Image 1 (cartoon, rainbow, N blue to C red):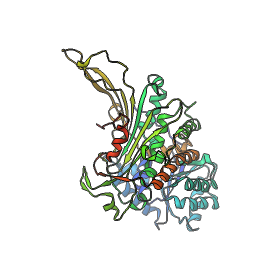
Image 2: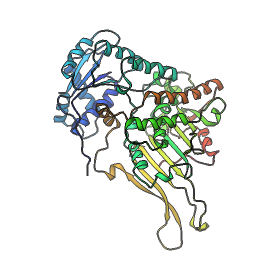
Image 3: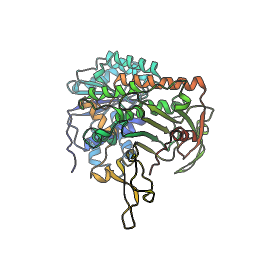
Image 4: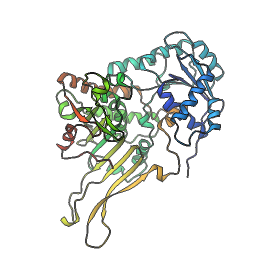
Length: 490
């Protein structure tokens, strides 16, 4: 049984950075799929804007090429693509000057009564000039929204500056700070598992849960992003946004409703409850790593410094033992790890329950492992509940651990949509539940800033690890000194 797709009202999506990588890889394919799903109503338009001197027809050719390159096999339908390209317009706009703004205003004029979304698929340094151009050329209507991509600052001070810059033009309810991790199907299912099933509700606390692990692993290295990544590192690139968002979804109290402010209020409480990591405890609570030459599934790969072509102590891996200081989670560690050039591309949350207090089965039954709930965000999205059962057959009571396995691809005869598809249309619907409020962004930086400062002040070492592994040995020690181990992905 497939879910019913509800069409949205007509809209104009203006994408700044229309010829960039994000637009080609994610935004255009996502919007195309939403058209196929029947969610567009006429006269919906997609308007590209960038400094490139292109005509609308030339940009349609560019978009067609991007769809052919980035859609999966069998997804490119000539008739649907032709219909999609007919919605596309293009205006050359230089955000730092007055060039092109009048032409954009003229193009938008026929749609002044419908939803108007401005998507910032550009560097944060251009957010301010674009906001100024939108305001000065009177492009804001009652149904205008703005979408901003990460990085939302590189520390608290720059995040505050960025938010204040946006606030000069847009009200907070118009601002959609996108984190595509929150649009993933399994993250959504985490809400369903927690709040639509009585099975887990009484167990979701320190009385029953031993610890929680969040792993986000990437197989790739710099991929042409050396300039950005070496100034960022794993903490800024992944922990401050993606991983903390997932942690909040796991740890938050039950919201009063699914209304956006109710959900985001509870996420904010989690961020404010995180135990500070400072110079005094950073070496015990965090591990930094940087990949060296090794092997991936594609063969031998260079180390970070070889790819970079210079010296650097930027971390490509970070592991953190985080703690939430409230009644629900007191004493339950949250072990976080993320990095580049790891053993596999993987994002998962592992909830490990406490072991049974006493076994009645005797030594011949074998070891009784703790129950685990594993939420796989990518790839192969799904949920596994690991339980102990009797090994089938005669010969006494022998126990083994097995998984109740629900793969979304197998359980539902539907295509699994990309996270951007949901989020792009949530903007049109004015549903901010899966977007970060400014106080969330700033609170996340308030927790991360002292870690960055501690690393700098104490010269915390960056430990090497071989590409194709799960990080430096110090990350293993971080969890094993507590008598626990990292979950081995299967």
